[in-house]
Every structure is written in C-alpha cells, then in structure tokens.
Image (cartoon, rainbow, N blue to C red; front, side):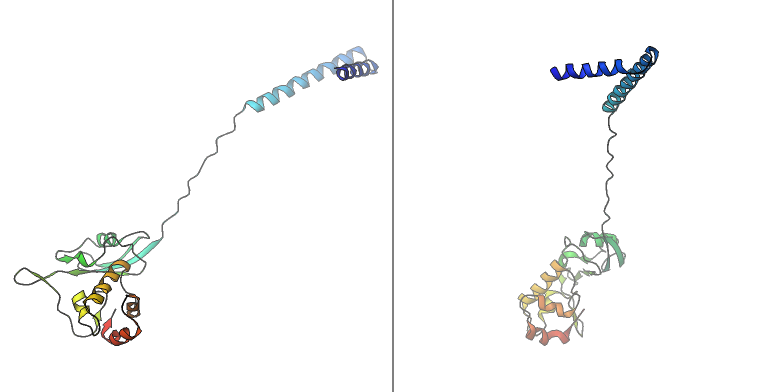
Length: 202
C-alpha cells in the first residue's frame, strides 16, 4: 500500500512539474485516456474471438493392384487386375464365374491371391453312368498345378499321402511357381525330387 502511495505521489509531482500549459496538460490527459481505453477494448476483443476449427483432411491410401491369370473351367478366361487383398473366389468371379461342369473342390476359394499367379479351375469328369471319375492322365510330364492326387500318386516314390500333401499345399499356397517348389512339400527331399523332376512340369 505504501508503494502504491509513493508511486501516486511521484506521478502527481511529475504531472505538476511538467512545463506545459493547462490546456496542453488536459490535451495530453485526454489522449492518454483514449489510448488506454482503446488498448483495453482491443485486448478484450482478441480474447473473445474464437479460433477457427482445424479442418481434418482424411488421407486415402490406395490398395496395391495385382495381376492374376484365371483359366480352365471359367466363362471368361484371361488376365485380370484385382486389389491386393483379393481372394481366389474374387478372381473366379472376375472371370465371369465358374463354367458349367467346373470342379471347385480342388481349389481353396478363401486363399489370398499373390501377384502373377495362375488360377486353374478343373472340370468335373463324369462317366456314362453319371459317376464322377478322375481325369485320364496324359502322356508326358504331369502339370503339378493341375494334377489330381490320383495322378500325382502315379509318380515314382509318391504315394497317396504325399500326393494329397501336394494338393493341400497347392490349395493353401497357390500354384507352384517352379517344379523346385515341390521340395517345400513335407516328405519330398532332394533325393525324391531328383527321382521325379523329369516327370513333372509347371
């Protein structure tokens, strides 16, 4: 309180000691009051103004595209462009869906596709009695991406168990990219692969 009184006394003494006339002092006082009032109004107005809301722009990430060759028993065989998370069923639908007589039991329709692979849809073979039978094996190397378990069983050293493993591997992982990939199947080592590699193809 004492400091405030001293400050007021100093200000009053300074005011009276000014070498201005009464009119000049009144003009100076009026200008000071106007400046103070304007300053208070500007500060008050700035505090009351709301900041504009920050606009959030969503970022869209495009999924990568893959190319898949769909062939066999489909209505429109060909190469199709699909999204990276597409599944085998999506590729078959893109190819106009499976054709009459198609055998989808040899394909894992829920498997996620990879770029550059081929989807082959087998046809059901029915004999004169209306019973489904295995396809007749063609002469020459067996296509390991299309062969049935019965056809693979005919290979030297490949019994029914390993033949079914090859079919199951194909369902889960998709088509073999090379015959060397047969060695990824459980039960087919280097020796067994050397025994059959001349009799298989992609």
